[in-house]
Image 1 (tube, rainbow, N blue to C red):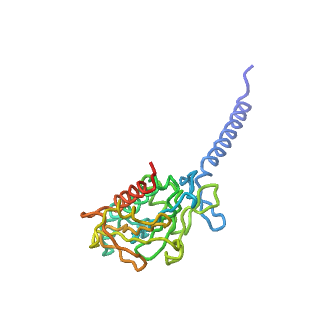
Image 2 (image 1 turned 90 degrees about the vertical axis):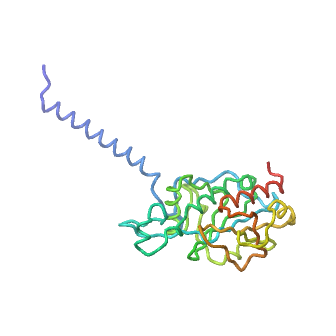
Image 3 (image 1 turned 135 degrees about the vertical axis):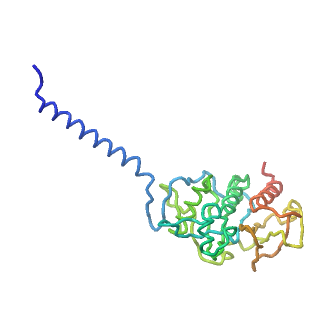
Length: 268
């Protein structure tokens, strides 16, 4: 006997409803982890995990990097706010009467990758990284943050940081990046030696000999420019040196410093 069409159609409808319900539940499970959540004024962001090691003062003296004059400016391009850069927003910046060559957040990205990937950081000797923007904002970046490897993702993280003032890893309470109050000197160790670096300095030194001559119980603070043009001018540095006869990028300058410190502290 052939089953009536009405009964067959009814059963098929039931299957379709179950399939749609299961599909919606699966979609919710996929979308849920990528949502940004606010917990005690901390904004969680997926993709910036915490590394297992943290700086330990018992390891000995450490180093702090201050990246000055970083260009992190938000602009409303079309209907969305974006972190402005010279590659993607050259026409937009020209229409606003601004020089695209000054909008180089990629310099900060390269510098952060270099210092956070260094053996100095992995050995627990990096105390912190501070970023001073061109418009005077101050950002604290913990040494156990793993910065996004691509510039596109990095721009998204910086945009959210500037908008939300802090970023935490998913499922963690500790802030990985946050906006803090000026001046930066209130966060520096009392016995630290603060050194500014610039190609324009008349004091040319060998960075290996310079760090080797520093006291073993003193934390070192290096101030490096994170801009395309210009020089670092601060009133809190005790010394102002040049470590090469040629202009260097911020990333390579940090590399030379980290290599010299690794030699001084016997980090292999």
